[in-house]
Length: 350
Image (cartoon, rainbow, N blue to C red):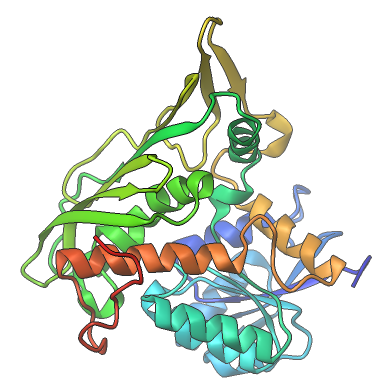
């Protein structure tokens, strides 16, 4: 696959699937879903009508009204799974078992058990698997990580990150539905947690509090993550209050501030002790800050190189984030239908 076009299948037809498809479409004005590097060859939904409408919108030749037809299509190199996270285990597992490579939206799964099952399936069938944590593939976030790793702000002491939406969301909304993995944590909190763990790794201790809805999902959650190094991370998510969606990393010799939209930034400011602030901005050539192209490019790079996982979004890191999310849910009392009592308990204490 070193030089050939990578052939994509898209499983699900919601907003994130449309955004991903749009970013794979070439910049020519042809409206075709084919380009020199990528081609969308098929889309699947549980509704033939929905799949066909999506296919017509993006110039895709094959529209399937069931997941199995997409998973078993031999002309597909990799499937982008864009369902709600409650269906990730089923959808991604079906594709992996059929021999397809998979890029799976975040949160990776509902819980650690499901995530471990997907990783095991990928290894069993010798397929590529990656969580679609596009933040990790963002060039400016990668620059920030490199600066921190090079000691630009000294030893990391604290990380702060938040992601809140004002709502209000009615009880019928997917974010309030336990059967769909509703709540703030898995939909929004995955970003602050993943950001903290990008810089500090998996925490050694976790404390958390939440406000729960009548349906039993978290309306807002705050967590304090701690490491044996002495580092702390304060993370917050909400579906009942719009926050600044900002992040800050403080070290022993400075800090980095990321303004609104920290998970897809267009700039950040480095403050180093004894120096003027330095602003780092996104390269216009990298496209809009909301572009999903970087994660798609990383998948295609890895496939052409014969890799089974991405060094930017390693599977061990995705499992570590799921352990943290499980631990937070256990501490605040959120359990989804079908989960056994104690299933979401992580190995960390606190």
